Image 1: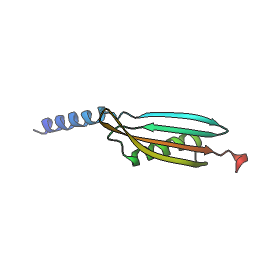
Image 2: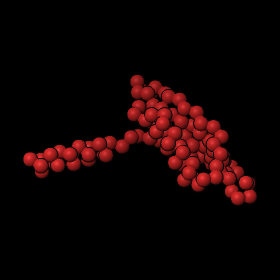
Image 3: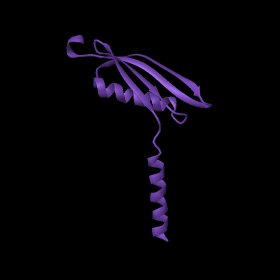
Image 4: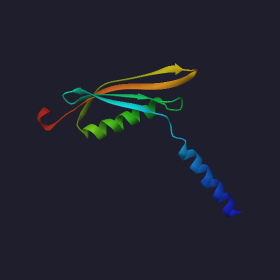
Length: 98
């Protein structure tokens, strides 16, 4: 019985991990250490999740020295499905700019 329960637990965890959310991201340099980062999420992606992804990208690109210039969130309805959007811009600082 334990083996059957373990099998179903593994099957369930595999099924949930293979369902990847369909996020589209686009990082665009805007010159002089400025960047724009656009995220299109799916119906399951919350504003908090999109903001976390944005923050992770900023940290990946800039490290700890940055300024977030703007963040806007919105949603669009595409074929009856609500997709959440985040559009943000940020600037990285180098030692000479501090």
